Image 1 (cartoon, rainbow, N blue to C red):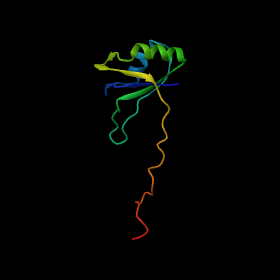
Image 2: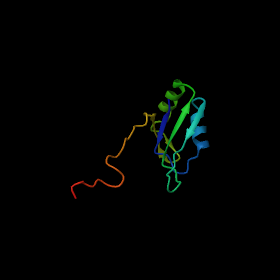
Image 3: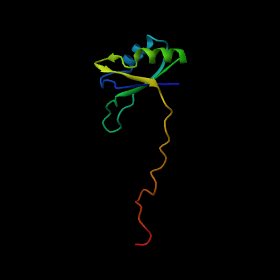
Image 4: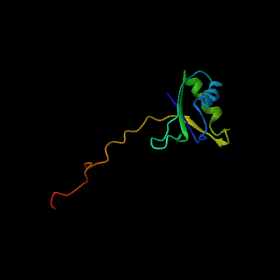
Length: 98
């Protein structure tokens, strides 16, 4: 299971998050997604901890807490949705009647 951490400061680092969550247990991994075009952090992260008990303690303690000047949004991460195709083909949806 993974924890979603939202409303993060754009200056946060993996080390910052790891240290904050380490107060509640052993941190296995921290992911800070970045924008593909700009390389800038996107304002959210995912944190994985060793046990569900540790994750629950971190969520209970940090959800809504002020950290680095922002109120955190912390909850269990939901599985990524399959967005599927956008329909049609990539060349455009031209009708065959023209």
